[in-house]
Length: 415
Image (cartoon, rainbow, N blue to C red; front, side, top):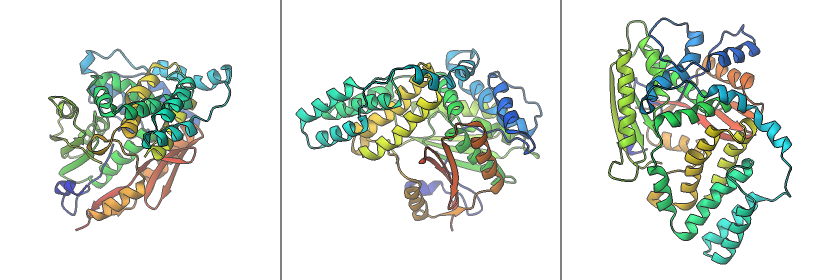
């Protein structure tokens, strides 16, 4: 964070650290049922949209999937349409499927993982191997949420015990997964849970509000990955009365193993530049490959993620398997098996980030009430009842069954 101070804008500009997509902002007179049905009816559209006037109430709804697919389907040629048809049919299949499955004898996999982690830390190989054997017997990448979580963490503990954690993690990161394939998993994720959709909607609408009359906007994105958030913002900026501002994005992410550590970051920049050009938005991109920033905390964090997917998505869904293997599983393995500079995944609380932001010279801004209200209404009307969304001291908090997963806030340089 200290090094990032060189990217700070002047006092009258806004800097927000962000992460993807937008939610539909319906008129308050619409019923909850109509709002959800309207979203479902357009979720299958992934075709390129011509630049024609659209009302604000349906722009967000169409952007998140249609525009993203247009921007990120180039690696596999023409995109063959949304996977959401399959997604919708499988999203609600998990519950019935679990009821049909006979329950095995209860095994406390969380405790076994903690005991195994303690044995690995103490270099008690005999005990660690015995516990790993028990975990393997009761876990599976195709079972329920707890079994899938235990399978991922067992891989990490086994790699740490063998001293091969960094090698395995680097091989997973180096594996070439196309942006189009990742987009399919992403579409499932934003359909199954509100975390990313609300996070990116909150961020994008806040930026648009604060930069309404700005001629230049500079965004610093820590952990830009494939940059799925920004096509929606670019499209909205192109429609601004008086013309769009000059947009500059500094994308920062962990370097990939191999001879081209910044390859993915650079590809993200090229896609965003092409997309901005198609909408006549002046655009500049700077990609930086740089490393940025305990078993128990990681276990709590990822157990919530796996339990959320197990509740909302069918177990045999292909995109769910991709999410758990290539995203959550890979991140969990890094937390468990890597140390020092090799560890790039660190689940942390929003209070830790509050301290960091204050230390490097940011001042927290109060959230915009209208954006907060619509975000909360969206989650409470269209997602599973166990998703939590609330406000605390200027932070928009999102979680699952009481555990905070995402926290969003707005800051500006305090000079």
